Amino acid sequence: MIVFRRCGSVLFLLLYLVLLHGCASMLARTEPPRVHLVGLQLQQMDLFEQRYLVRLRVQNPNDFPLRVRGLDFRVDIDGERFADGVSNRPLEVPAFGEALAEVEVSSSLWSLARRLRDAGEAGVGAMEYRLHGRVALTGYAVPLGFESSGNLGALVPVR
Image 1 (cartoon, helix red, strand yellow):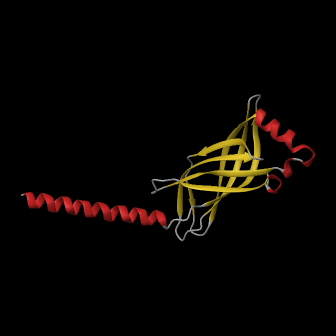
Image 2: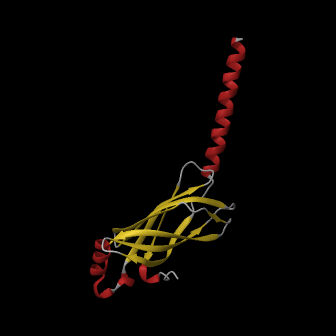
Image 3: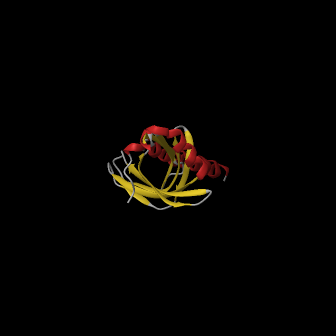
């Protein structure tokens, strides 16, 4: 009886290690998606908060589709926090393809006023942005991080 328990314990441990190795190797071969800010449009402006529609281009460098179940990100402008956004809308990104995600974000009036004041005569087009966050994928326990940056003048207004 004791021999069967030990064999059962050893078999259970081996099965656990094989499954753990399979999950780890699957995660190790997955390249994180590339996420870029491609549009920003003011939706609503109140005294204390503004709502923007942000368009993100999600690119998949993998040879299999990615099923995005959520996004969590932040936009910094000229090195300071501008807006935060989250989305739980599912998004399928084909293998070696891309998809667009539209997400509403919020920022404060003071944040916007500081950015515009600091832009001065150079204008909004000269302002630099940094986008960083995490993408939660179906079938993955750990979200994958992303980061990109660029110039606000290069953005196409969201229509």
